[in-house]
Amino acid sequence: MFLLLSTTLSHIFKGFFLPGASFKQEALLFQMVRVGVRAIPIVVLIELAIGMILPLQMFNQLDQFGQADQIATINAIAAFRELGPLMTAIVLSGFAGASIAAELGTMVTAEEIEALESLALNPVRFLVVPRLMATVIMTVMLSVIADVVMVAGGWLTAIRLGIDSDVYYQLTREAVNVTGFMTGLIKAGVFGLLIGLIACYLGLAVKPWQGSEGVGRATTNTVVYCIVAIIGADAVFTVIFYSYGLFT
Image 1 (tube, one colour):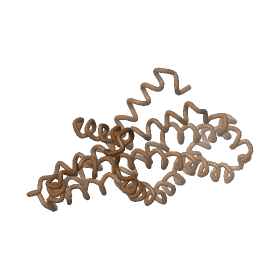
Image 2 (image 1 turned 30 degrees about the horizontal axis):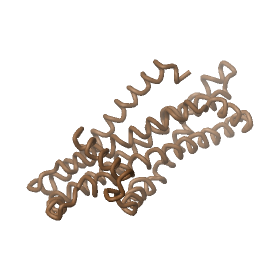
Image 3 (image 1 turned 135 degrees about the horizontal axis):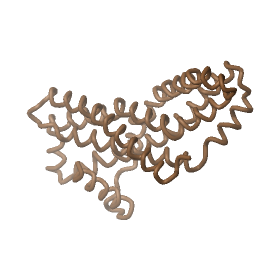
Image 4 (image 1 turned 180 degrees about the horizontal axis):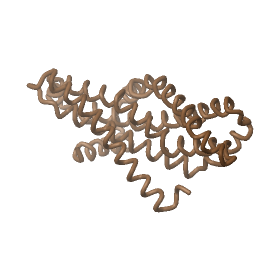
């Protein structure tokens, strides 16, 4: 897997600085639409539900101490630092990761990878690079959308609970700073990298003789491994960010 990552990064670097080795932008845009744009409704629906449910769960406890309006602060922090990038990545694990693994696995069993190699075309450059880049880019972009939607969901609940919109807006602005926003983007970028890397690796690891069974196994393993890797990476990031005082 590390060899695949290093080879992919090498092709990306060459694509930016060596015109003759550039990757097709059309392929990248196609994968971005396929990986991320089609997942927008799912991400929006999930984040809106979480944004509405979380303040509702906290309201009674905070109201006992006269701090009911602090649901805006907690909801904003949870969205930008944690739940926005985390839930987006989990959704894309099943939506994009499984799709990439199944597609590449099917290409292996159909011997399309060997056909590319026989034409002196590098499969990593033509297949892995656009998919990996698209996954990283769209995970970050969808994470931003998820943050906004979750805050909006909290606002809908706040109105229902009698909290003034101006108060909610002001507390949200105070809770969200550049550091918190950037840490969320860093998480999202790494999560996207993990999804793309694991999906491509397991898809290409399918053997031609395994057929549909191998493709199905690779697809299932991709979703499981991606979720485990994402949660593990999230835990590591949280410890690091708190250790350096980025979460205050």
